[in-house]
Image 1 (tube, helix red, strand yellow):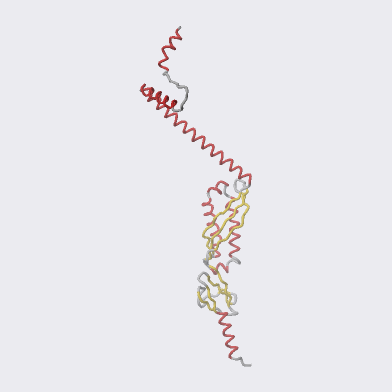
Image 2: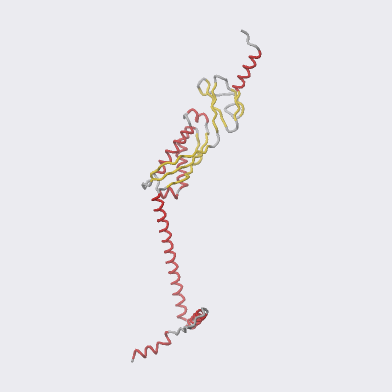
Length: 254
């Protein structure tokens, strides 16, 4: 049975259509020939045009762009036995497409699971105060540990950021009371320091006035001016104790 030229042309077009693949700049191809990893494919592994053998080769596309993955909220018990709910975000990308396909079944799912277990492990070794105040150090530790685990898969973790730390209501109230007590303590310390500095200045002023009686008289006059400015009906004239001392002494001797 002879095959018509039209049938041959259609068959050729189908083979060409199935054999030519175009990959965008951000994708790479992993090709299997008869089930084995193929090498030396025309066009390489992308980007651009790749020629494969239909029905013999199987091509798997791998994106090389950075993936932003949300880590679901995890219940974590810190070192000081406080239960918190923490979620995070992981930034990673594939750097070796062949290992990402051959070494692990699903690198996206595997990276997500690794991030969740590492998040619980690392935060479980931290104090609550460190979790709230040393966020950058914890993020760096998470990134380093997860990246070491995903490196055999050809996945590079570039950053890990802890997003939210949800505390129990009792712990939130305790932290609020602690912060209020700390503010009151600082206010009392500042007030005491101000009183101490004021007493030092008063002692210095008294020492200066004691060496110059005219300064004391000027202070009396200034006080009179301040009292008169208030439009009071009563005017007080301060009299130095030294002036009354002889009279007081005479009364005591009688």
